[in-house]
Image (cartoon, rainbow, N blue to C red):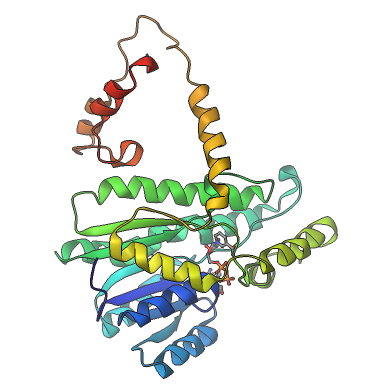
Length: 311
Ligand SMILES: NC(=O)c1ccc[n+]([C@@H]2O[C@H](COP(=O)([O-])OP(=O)(O)OC[C@H]3O[C@@H](n4cnc5c(N)ncnc54)[C@H](O)[C@@H]3O)[C@@H](O)[C@H]2O)c1
């Protein structure tokens, strides 16, 4: 999407951090951001700041986990402009401590905000973006932890795996449309995410070891990358049509080790007499022409021919 000028952009989690800075970078290109956040007052204050800098921006209240809120957000957005850039970014931390001690309510909340909300975002805007017949773009915020899981919250990591999966699957669906797609996988950034999570999480406040972990995370993230740099990088990727947005190359060696382990775990077929999966048949059965997710621009047949030892 080369020219963002005049395009209406809907950004979730835009009152703070990476969402706010993505909205700012979009405004700097002449796009018209709608800053949506569960904290509508801060979203509107952020939009007012962008307007003072000359942008055409509004702020709205939206809980991304509430489907009814999305209907209202869609109506408000429609009065402002036709959304052509959708940045589904809002996210929160998960529980802490041993997995078997997780509060199920916190688990469901983390999934609702971090993963399920992307469906509501797409139900609200993606159909019209596809039908418009002009360039549009969807950017989804996952995390580096969706590729290289460090020893942090299981709810956070697994909901971000879900987010990466949503983006990778959608990449197939959008392959023959004018809607580009990106997935942001940042490492650490100096945002308010720990405080936001503490403020919004359901149930009793965290105590004991979990509270200490939250405090430690706050300290570590304070030294993270500036969200302004990440927001700028997201907008560059929207312009160039990049799918993966990696902002922190210091994780590359661990990603390499992770994928090397996965590849080295492939052995011979469990059934030596089996001819092998009909992957092209699988693709055709789903009405698709190719599989973008795993093999980029290659067809599945080309990818298999390049790696003959997999059988
Ligand atoms: N900060 C990091 O180190 C880091 C690293 C990787 C990925 N991320 C991801 O980046 C995204 C943005 O987080 P951030 O670090 O900028 O945090 P942040 O807390 O500074 O900003 C997140 C914003 O989302 C809003 N929000 C939370 N729940 C919401 C809901 N239900 N509905 C609408 N808005 C809601 C918050 O009010 C806040 O303004 C998240 O998806 C996060 O998981 C952050």
